[in-house]
Every structure is written in C-alpha cells, then in structure tokens.
Length: 308
Image (tube, rainbow, N blue to C red; front, side, top):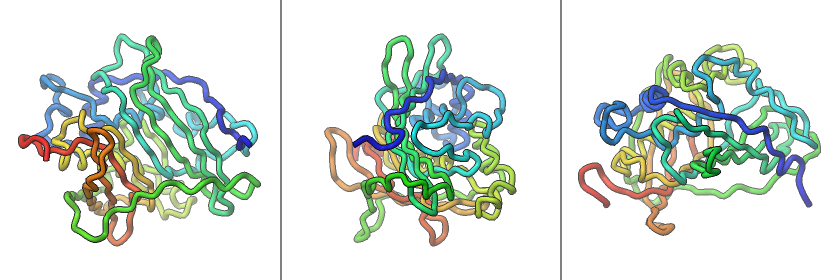
C-alpha cells in the first residue's frame, strides 16, 4: 500500500556554483590555512569541500540574496496537507558522494532532482517530509551526489497520516574514549557568515521567527553544525583529503544558539564496507547532544602519515 505523497517529483531545479562559492563555503565551516586546497583557488589540488552540494537546493543559480520564505513556498504534495514553510527545521541529512564536483559549474548545466520518499504524521509535535535529492549533470545524466533529507514541520501534525517507520540508529561506543575530538566557539556572527552560502532562512538572523517557534530567538543553522562536523572529521581522520569521504549523516537533535560551544567526538568502529571504514560521531552543546546518529564512511588517514 502506497503512502501519501511518496514518489511525487518536484520540478527539476538548475543549480550553479563558482570558485568563489567554494572558497566561501570552506571558510564558513572552519577550514584552516593548513588546508589551502579548500581555501586558495590557485592551489594545484584546489577542490570543493565534499559536503558543499548540501547548500545547492537553497542557492539554486543565485548570486544574490533571496527571499527564503518565497523560495520555500512549496509546491503542494498531493494527498497531504500544505505545510507552513516558516515553521520548518531540519530533522536529519544523509549525503552520499559518487563523484567529486568540478571547482566551478561554468560551461555545464547541473540540476537538483528531488522526489518525496515519505510523509509522516508525528501527531502533536509535527510532520516529517523525507526527500531524495540527486545532483545531476543534465547533459550526461551522471549523479554526483545524493542527499536524503528529513524536514520537520513544527506543530503541523495530527492530519491522519502514517506515523512512519523507525529510523536506523547509530549510537557511538560508550565503553571507550573517542579516537578524535575537536571543538569550536560559535559567535553572534557564525550564522550570519554561513547564510551567505545561500541559506537565507530568517530564523538564523532575525530573533522574531525563533521566538515564535519556541527557540527564544536566533538559532544557528543545523547545517552549519553538520558541515562544521564533517570538516573536522575529514581534517582529524581523513587527512583533509576530499576523496576520503564517501557517506556522511547526522540527526539534528537540539538547537544551537549564537555563542554556544560545540564539542565533537568521533569513534572508529572497525566495520568496513569495501575500502570504506565506518566512523560514528556525536556533537555536544554543553550537556546536550545537538548532532546525534552521526555516521560516516571514509578512508581513515592522518595528513602526511598515510593510512592508519
């Protein structure tokens, strides 16, 4: 029996990026001067950070700021209520990398192609919309990345839809210390810089939307924390080599406010999928976990020392 909305395809959306976009993104998620291959366009190994495609559904082809709410005014999904995009937060994101991006899309046409893979009624807390978004070279049909997203529409449930299946759980080991830890002190400007990548949700700049949603004011993009953690993981365990990240996911467990300190921990599990090793991780904001269910498939090495 099919569930409401499943299989619905949104119109294809052209996307583009420049070398400057790649530089800005790497700067905004914590790349350092030791990683000039992400921060200097003339570096012989200049590369786009592998999680960059996550921003393209927001950015599209725009090089100017956009009206987030107007852009997000969703095409209604058949068979389900029309949800309010001004009250939506990220639930979980999974990125799968199939091919590295060229450093610019110039001279080529790329599209994001998104379809609904689940719409779940969670009752009073809200509803979840799960989508699959492929980044595709329109001329060849090659898929560069795939993103599985869960969007949580706050207090927009109880419409009689299916509750949905339990999602796979990837808890970190609790019987030993992590193999890597790293941290950052966010500031009042953290989200204001990250939003320049193309994610202009007012929730991350204006206190009013956050107050209405019960957050007490501005919160930092969940995808900032998600991308910052991916950078730290690649830096600490992947030798800062973009080719060493194959798959990456995390659940957004609690909000982060400007000025909060994030502390990430990662554990190698020893499990392998071919040449790729599973790494589990979590990020804490004080005593609270803000990114949970963290799992990556990667090649583990330390810069200058080769594989571990």
